[in-house]
Image 1 (spheres, rainbow, N blue to C red):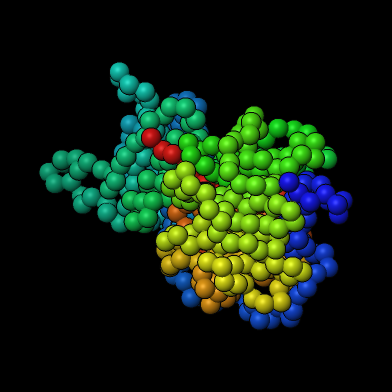
Image 2 (tube, rainbow, N blue to C red; image 1 turned 120 degrees about the horizontal axis):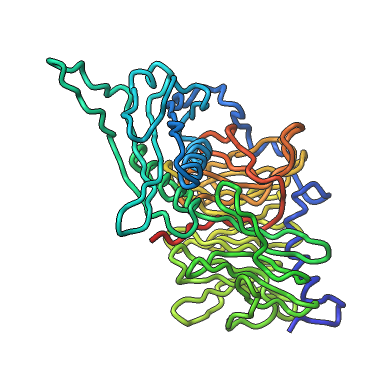
Amino acid sequence: MIRRQRGWSPCALALLCLAAPRRLHGEAGPTTEDSVLGTIDVNGSAGTLPPLPKLAIAPLLSHGQGDEVAQQVARGDFSLSGQFDVLDEDSSPSGPFLVELPPDLAAWKEAGADYLVRVFSQAVEGTASRIMGEIYLTHSIPPPADAGADVPVRPSFHTSVALSGDPRMAAHHLVDVLLGALTGRPGGFASRMAYTAQVGNARQVFVLDSDGFALHAASPPLATALSPAFGPGDVIYYALSVALSPFRLASTPSGVPAPVQVPGSLMGVTFSEDRRTVLLVAMDEGESTIYLESGGKTQPYAKAPLANHPAFGPGGKIAYVAGSPVQRVYVDRRPVSPPGFMASAPVFCETPQGLMLFCTVKTAAGSDIVASYPNGQGLRRFTQRQARNWDPACSPDGRLLAYFSTREPGRGAGLYVAPIARPWLAKKILGQVGDSLRWGALTVP
């Protein structure tokens, strides 16, 4: 049990662990001159990257809600992906745009599109309806017909997914497949994010889709929830305290305690990518210990003051935050975040350019997201002096980073998603902020 003689309740100690790195949000705390973090190209003016290819989403005449959802999700996902410059619907050539009519590729090329994507729902006799996806290359325009014969316009790629359950998630899955065909790396939009936020005197877990839709609470009200994590079967686990009781491992939505063999009050939890191994941080008798549980066996991994926010990386890498009074990010028990800076919220990200580690550091202007290699080398900013930015989470495909931000005037506080290769293309997907952001892939049938 938590040591009581100092007057700390388990809930107060948990919030102390949460608050220590949250000094990044602008409160006073240790810091050094942040020029050591370097500068970044914040608007693409450096010209080191090629222009994005232009992609159009055909505004097909809708035959039902399935078509409308599929086209809306496709336009939103491709825009968020940072892989394409998605043309506005107003840039489309003159119609009509019907599924039965082959697209006029010459007209789409004239409109500026390098790629044309068509998505639509289709009923299949004897089975569930499906969402169809087609990709056309506008530079592959068929030659003029000989002797009056028609040359069919065929997609360069076509696929479909079952339209069952959540139609939006089916559409996200379709886009992931289309991104794989276009870029060689499938997308990560068939996924969800989870975070905690204050609700009155309580703290709840909230869950939303990768594009900001379907926001809902996923933990009991009138309780304190910390450290959400995506576990087996896409169930979200978290640490939960009711009426100042010690934190116990619970899962959505009921908050029923889950069996866990660690002493003390649970401060943090996370699962490996395959959801078979779990990291648990617990505080007992005033000391915090990180435990590794796999195959039904639990063993201590490390002891560290005020340890929190554990994270798994590929190859068995483990990151966490610990330290007092200055908290730093540790990878495989070694400090890797810059000395002298309050750091929090590490996350590994397998980007197309290699494995990176992202975390938050307190700066003179507030807080920034920084990136480095897992050993701490190659440090660079991801955000720069744009108010306060915190709690990064990496998309399952390694292309995108989500984070909370107050941003500059005119854009407002909220949850932002940015392409890692082009952080200046950040888009706000939710007008709320919180803590302990996680991004997890969903099991796709």
